[in-house]
Amino acid sequence: MEELIETVAEFIVCCSKIVVFTGAGASTESGIADFRSRGGIWDKYNPEGLSFQKFLANEDSREKYWQMSTEMYESLKKARPNPVHLAIAGLEALDRLDCVITQNIDGLHQRAGNSREKIIELHGTALSVSCLSCGRKYDRDEIQKRIRNGVKVPRCDDCGGLLKPDTISFGQAMPEMETTLAYERSFASEVFIVVGSSLVVQPAAHMPLRAKQGGAKLVIINRDPTPHDEYADVVINGSAGEIMEGILRKVQEKIGN
Ligand SMILES: [Zn+2]
Image 1 (cartoon, rainbow, N blue to C red):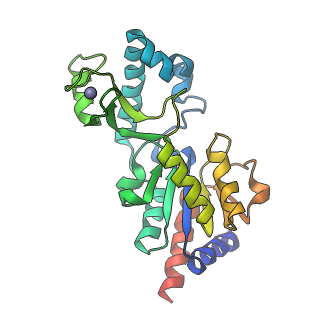
Image 2: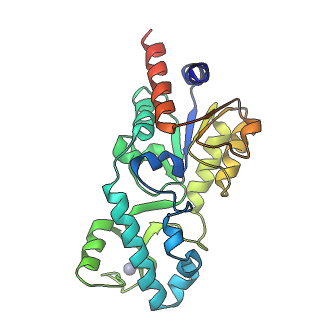
Image 3: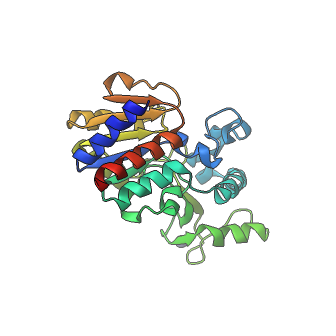
């Protein structure tokens, strides 16, 4: 494994456009369960019942959605950035990061120290809420306070429209701007590092291939094998935190020399 870490560190030092792509596995070491895994939130709530269409259609579904979402948010709030997030923030501090594309909604990249403009959130964020009618944005904590005070389905102060967290629900379109940007940055990247994604959900699964088409070196760091391992230049299976920490340390050594 040492040798593989060394190779990835060399890629990072030699190239300039480094894109990191993170999935649920990047946040598991922060204690956030993969929603899709056993014991995850989708075991307890039926995702079909929480689709965007149901949310729009009736008050009962909206109430259920906010219950689920409140439970999820409370666990996200307690989570702290782990060595994966800190290593990626470390790459930015060394000026070795073009951007981080994430499937996660937990805001941990930002809390670890990555600047907002370097983070592309493909599935939105749990940290804010928007009015579906007028687009007004609210801080999530402010809305959660209303829910703690007994409001079951919060509504917009300005127009009375439905409020919904800025996460992408089942049946809801992917954010167009973020998706387009993510594809562009993937294609333009020189090194594309997947961390903690099983690469089975679209469009995630496509990004590494896009990077490869653009000529990037592809690195996949995940606990388990992925369907795209055969296209990768380097595959490292193991603890994402330990591996990313090791890579950052090597990069620091090399740049320092
Ligand atoms: Zn509104």
